[in-house]
Image 1 (cartoon, rainbow, N blue to C red):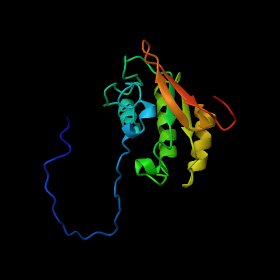
Image 2: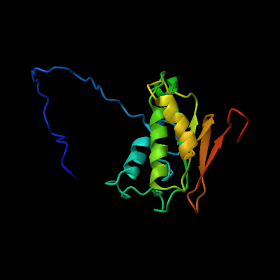
Image 3: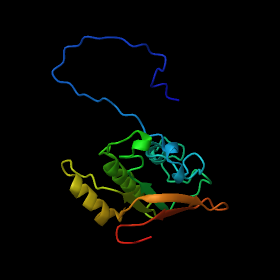
Length: 177
């Protein structure tokens, strides 16, 4: 819409004199449809983190309001499922990205800033808060923003047909279900 990216641009080689360089190799997003038990592509309220980032954006489809894609209603309970495809050879990902945990924490905080009634829960396999100040950020997310962290992997999601509400199936570390 803004025409900020020229998709027809051709590759070119430039020689520049610089004082320093930042290497930003980018990333390849995970194809969420590879994990069909989570309903991505079948259930409208299951979105990727990049799509949720767009939902949070003031220039996004909902003007920064945290609305459900299925019906445009305000979301209340929002869950982030971490480690999807991580260390999973069937998805050709035998490694941990090491950034998702903090990315989800940031999104949960921003969601709470947009709408105080949101009840965010982050399901995780491992806490990856190893950068400078990351542990404090994670602790602050729990304490100041009420972010709930559940150690456990979600085994599946079911959708209630009339309301499009989602039911997550999981077993937490402490036996919580």
